[in-house]
Image 1 (cartoon, each protein chain N blue to C red):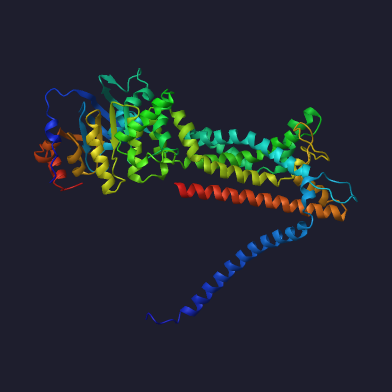
Image 2: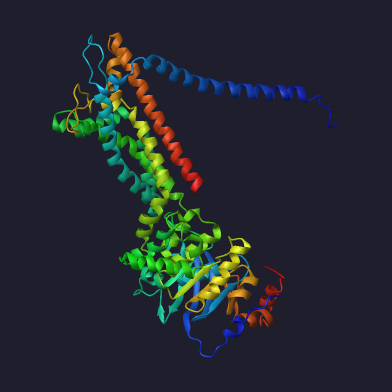
Length: 284
Length: 266
């Protein structure tokens, strides 16, 4: 009976077909990603040179020129966004993980969930309404504000999970030493959760770095080395958009170069997040 | 069976002072009545062991002594726990100040995610000690008393988490000793440790007896026999019998204690 394999052919066929199907779909997904990365790399590689990352944009027809101001602008805008989003996100996560109970906590969680689903263009519009219109001019700060709103739900969720992951026993240990509860939370629980919070921050940064829609009517873009967040500022993602919809070939090339830079930056952030996570995993 | 080393006789010293007086303690988790009308006198400078089968409430009892249940929203406590005659549940007691005098060591070592030095120094700093030299001295002294100094003196800046389980537990004890508490509560301090680490912790407890009042919850009757002067037997949330360790292990008065001691259940 054990050797009887009359039923086996059909079953084996089904199994093989299933494996092939899942394998095919996985290959398709991975292949698509590789094709996109490869295409951007091929198209963009030619545009990348020292001048491209250090110089200001040149007018059409003038050779060279770069996106240096856009790179700097991206860093400034994302940094300000992080400065806004991190304290609010981490403290909200802390509240949810440690103190939040019942209706209020559920409501905050639900709102954060909804916020993470709001299209970025709508958040840009919101930033435009409260940070641009009253002052009658575009500013990098308004873009930072929009980015901060985009990062907030991610920061809240990852912080809550990170803090929840810290064993209660550590908090009890602090309490048993005669520490006030907030002391244990600030000096013991938060440091223990830090690697995961940093990972969440890096992923949130990676998420907003490529955002373009909210920038259209907030940062607006600039042709100059603009470092003052109160003024309109160049942003890499915005430059890619502007160059890509232009009718000029050398601008198209620059758009590909910019896209490649952006992808590389996001890749570095993701790998960084993974490394931070890996170190954390080994330690505990 | 196992006999108390010599600790048994120490328990019957005349006029031993009562450090912790628990009266009619009841603890509920939601609707679950975990401790029922428990009363116990814990004597000064003695090691008192709480034994009993899993789920009998001994951990719940010991956590009620320094109000660790405050952290559990569903827990409710009634009755009184007097330390030197003051009820820790009375309004005029600040639980944070009280816990510096009534410290706790937990079942699983829970070092803080910081350096070995800071793990011990942290409690001192939080309690207002600023003098670096004094802190360093107290850290060394505490680590020596926890019999950990020789193993860690060359790696004080390593993370506390890099130590072995047994070392971590001794670090947690050093952390507690640095604050010079009066009572040390230990909730199965060796249950997560290997036999060698367990022996070290037990030797340490024997040392601590001289300066502190120690309450130890233990799963292991052998351990209770080795380290304690007095033993209380818990069953289903009640204290069945209290006595010197020798008496509990050799001449238990209650039938249920005898059954447990002789391994008929639990």
